[in-house]
Length: 113
Length: 115
Image (cartoon, rainbow over all chains, first blue to last red; front, side, top):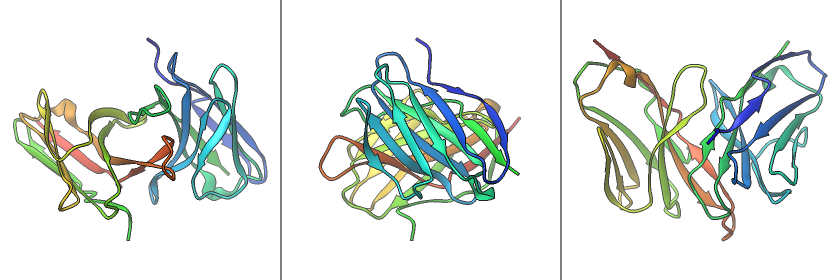
């Protein structure tokens, strides 16, 4: 069974631009969560989607948004990029609504210059 | 104070040693406890998952939870150079009584096992 797939693996963007990251969960998994990982703050929760609806949100500004499609694939968007948005963005899928084990993708490394 | 505290190390041990990795947490409502391993330039990989106090064994790995002390540990026996990675403790918490929720991670401990 294929794992969580994130694209692209690496991105370089300029301050002020916007970016869209993509995540395909493990087949059959319907819950998708996004996390930001930085050396200073570690792994921090951004949001969770289930059945195309955002179910839970972390403490990030509104520039960070996401969506989920009917096939459970998810996208994350960051608008008006700032230097501090440089991070590894990780997507995790869970097998079901109540399942607590989360399986992560390889991440997208975003560099803002 | 962070909700989950983890000693960042780094920790360097000889091959064959027993490794002990530890986290403390502050929220007594936390119920589900996980350990992830992350190799450089990779995503975290789920190693162990438990929800009750006590020990859970999987091969060379043992996860231990003490809810009364709010303390979780991961023990690695007969450590190997391939175990060299960052180890992250994580706790799943539900959002407002729903089955949705989030993982709160420790900072991660960098482990190096040298031959």
